[in-house]
Image (cartoon, rainbow, N blue to C red; front, side, top):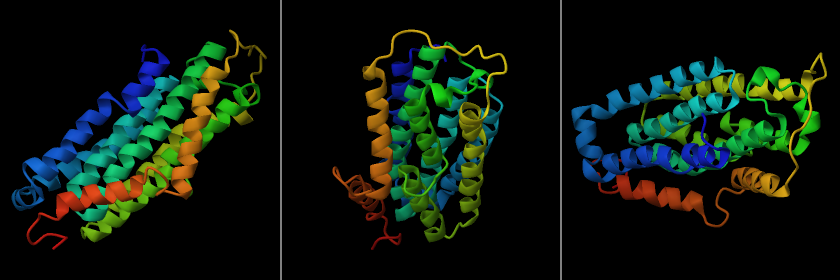
Length: 265
């Protein structure tokens, strides 16, 4: 993870990584179509690969001490949520997949920008070195904590909205087993992100070597606060402008409505 922080944030939240999962949604919905994919059983294989990716990437993330590398492996698991939602081929799961495109973008760009600010201000890359930064960088760590809770699917944050719809989609598809995958992933997300919070707020550097480097700039902090506010607003009022909840519903309906004998007739 040697890319500059703004580049990492865009790559892992909005740009390159989203292209792949968006392509999966388009191929499933409009190239082959849900009916054909359901008949030949390809989506079942895709669903299991996605479920495996969710768990394995989360376990790998737990082993990373480098902060940005841990967030990068988290991205792999979160994008697999979207693929799994698409593979279940129910209106609610596909709706949840589209919602998670936005939810993950908001939360992960917050986390990467927080990580960049932490590294810029402390010159520390490893989680094991972030003793007591909650007191030194209170706003940054507050935003990091909120985004981490969103990744774990905490209610009243945007991550909960998308994951709730994904879980309902699994029930609608008659495959409740996948709910256990999402629950396990949420617990694993808490397991690899909350240690950062614990280190920041509840651990102290025994050698008291912590110090800040460089001049503080509000231009670094304001974008983080904006994306954190979006994570909360879209979690409490998911259909606030630009009505991304309704837009996701329309996108899912567009995929499923053409499926003769499918969900929407």
